[in-house]
Image (tube, rainbow, N blue to C red; front, side, top):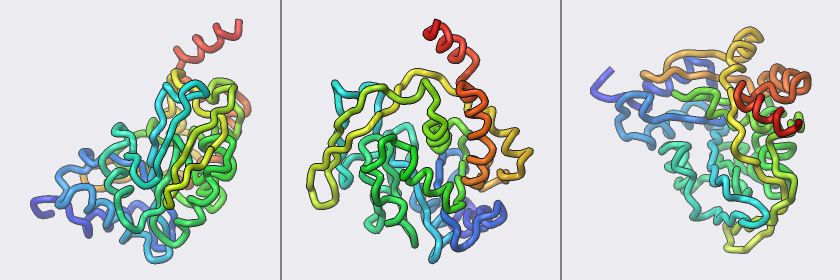
Length: 266
């Protein structure tokens, strides 16, 4: 390896992990975990696209929500200009800025995409009653049998687990009241997006899904550069975790949050 990690080297590691041309992959990432990358975030994006294009699709979260969002403080998101939240990292923001990217019209949990099915994944998100539920890019990825790549980050970054919380209708996840948020589309038109937003504050322990996913054989692990990476079959994630949530709706809460939530229910 040269002085820094190259796009070709990252692509080779992604192929060794299991990504192939034609795959659709939702990427959560930590740039610093890879080690020094020549060209930084743009190089990582080039490598991801090279791994799955021309017939595949790369998706990334473009999250913008905050604990203040709700009926009294409805969020407003401009699909052309609103940046990704800083806490999801530098790679998603660099991806969002690419001219060929498509971004779904959701006020808090939008997704960006480049590739063969980018339009299909991002269309209609504004009509979803829940940020990550049926009809969202997160569930469409499960329906299509795509992949979730945790590139140098843990399950705590896996937004698709929120999708499963919504599919299971867990009691701690969504606000009761509907919020009328505003999204500005690519043409500058304001669209009112009505739905239930996330209820922040309940600490999760998403890492507990690692072992069930390993046992089910739906997650491959390996190195990409210096980063530990997890490649998860999205439909397999649903098959494994959704029954666990239906059997125990508080399964993904931390032990402390579970106890606190149960106290609120008397």
